[in-house]
Length: 242
Length: 242
DNA sequence: CACCAAATGATAACTAATTTGCATTTCAAG
DNA sequence: CTTGAAATGCAAATTAGTTATCATTTGGTG
Image (tube, rainbow over all chains, first blue to last red; front, top):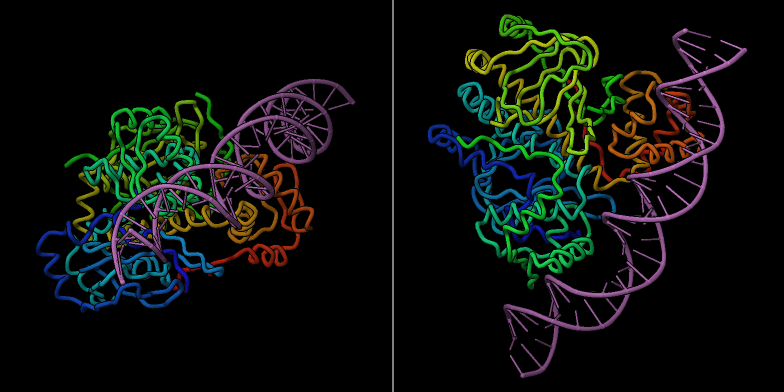
């Protein structure tokens, strides 16, 4: 099976579709209760841990390493949807929406995952109503991100979306030197490497960035942000800081 | 303010992004409790009931009529995201994700909405843990739909997506004569009317459909479905019937 | 330091979609 | 039956992206 591992080697990108770190942000008590449920399975790197269509179900918490989720089509093309790392959870779709597995999942590096059965999970959900509210918040955030992503796709050109993604990454890593290559950027934004190359070249010509081997450096963040914002047709909507 | 009301006049379309009818599917007890909270406001047709960015918050249940949600950009272009009708709820983003209003909302026809304050809503959420689990399921379904939609956008051409949408509508209305015009289809799929016209013409040339004034008729549903499926590169994933 | 794999750069041919503008058809209301 | 608004049909020019191919640069490894 041939998979493009581009995005897989690095992690924590996937911009607007960012998945909140549910487990890590849980109150201690809940986290302790979760730690007592299910059991941890260890996986080798690049191991296929689930396939779209599987009828398995569990609430899963990544305790070490990362998992790359995506969909493999008949031609063997693998589209990455998200890369989850330690502290993040998955399994909501089988458990809550009555669906089979919706994504293929492949480990990135040595990975450990705590799998909690439906029974145990539902038990905890009943016992700790707070958990369902927290999950509800987490899923709602993800839904909002996904809807914004769809609208961005319809409304803005790649030139803007790529700029926005780079700026978000910069903010997130607090570093204007971004260790991500063009192929990964292409996966992230769902376009071809050529298209990314073209836009980066254009950014560079405008003096906003420097292109390195496997990295992009935003040389004048403020000016770049201003320029990207000039595309904005919609006021961005941000969560309250609480 | 100039708005394209195409999608607005009809309702219940918006294919894969379909929002589950949370309120209608609630157990009687919960529905009764909700009915006792907040109060109902009546709106005239085409009334602007909220704007993206507003800091208002409430859990809202549409009791009569419909609301068209979308985003108006600086150029006055309005992109429809969803049209919710009686029995459907909204307001999760301000309440659960700490966001301001994310969409502009415009009533479609005489509309009544029950607005429930944050306090009252959170009270009920505490009192009835079942509610949060049901909402969690509903939001999870929506998230799944949104993610599939994003992947469809990346993977399939309009020729397929339009066919899929038409077939879904046919199934949903149990009628192969679809009262929807090309402009509405364009809004639904996020493309131009011209593009829709071209595809429909192609479908027609293949003998699958007949094009009417303000309507599309699928003349040979089985053959059309087979042909559309031939594009499929991914097994569709369906919720269990329970 | 020589080599190889990975990453980037560049180009061409192609495709799907857009925008624009206008002509034609259809339906409903007066 | 006429008229006007809405819906459809059609074509041209343009754009943003694709795939494919190959050359060049880079950086780590034996």
